[in-house]
Image (cartoon, rainbow, N blue to C red; front, side):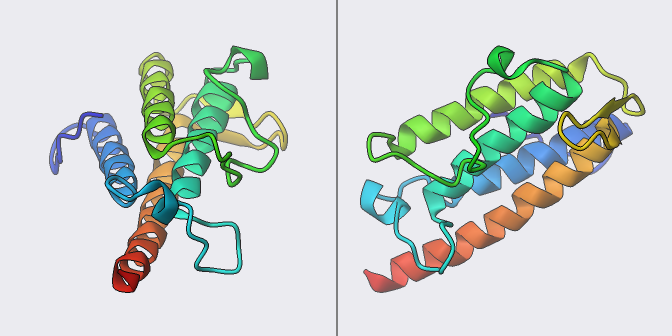
Length: 161
């Protein structure tokens, strides 16, 4: 992933930079954790550090590939899990989940590059119209929120050591 940490520039560049920073921050919360630690459930929900990354992969596919790109489910670069990505198989490694997320993010950048900020698309399930501008703002907030969750989980994991 590329991150430029832009604080000035055209609106689109700022949106792209902020989303890339949120992506990087989210991955940073799990990178370096052991396979066991990445799967620790420290809250009542199924939220774990690795599940946050897998959920973000789902969000990239749903919003950029499925909604913005109007791709059929089988044309996306991977599955759109019914569980939203919060279920992680025992055979999935941290490195594989991160790599899958980075591939989905790269595909998102490719899809978004061809669409003007104000162009709208209907969400495939709800029919609600959203613009690329809205998707950038929504996912930046979503990934930043999940990075915060990941920071707290990592702090709890590291305090156990």
